[in-house]
Image 1 (spheres, helix red, strand yellow):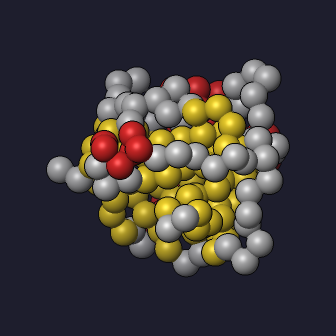
Image 2 (cartoon, rainbow, N blue to C red; image 1 turned 90 degrees about the vertical axis):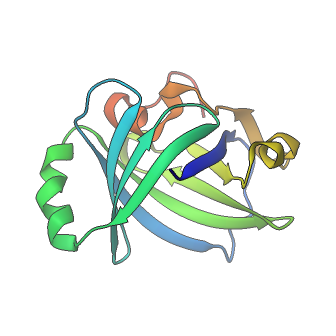
Length: 157
């Protein structure tokens, strides 16, 4: 089963997004039980994806599938009340790709950086750049599903 090994940080400085690959992302979460499984649909540019993630923390199981725009449009109404819109910038820092998500709408002002790794050792050795703030890896309130359903956690930027 494919694994996602990822660390997540709040962004408190100015990320170097000039010239970065940038895209608008709309994503919504389908209703599931409150266990550790989430089902997300996402549209960015002309691509639509369905992703299932299970687990929490640094390492999670992830299956990502291509879906047709028609299937996306059919499922989108089911995500009412559990959606986020964000602008994603892909930034390179010392050969490491960082995804910087700048949230829109009710989450405006929240900026999060995510870094994926090949293994746990690489994740443990990673030194974040100065523009990263507090690490929020594994904190459920900073998961996109929670942000989509519950809004921004109090007081954090």
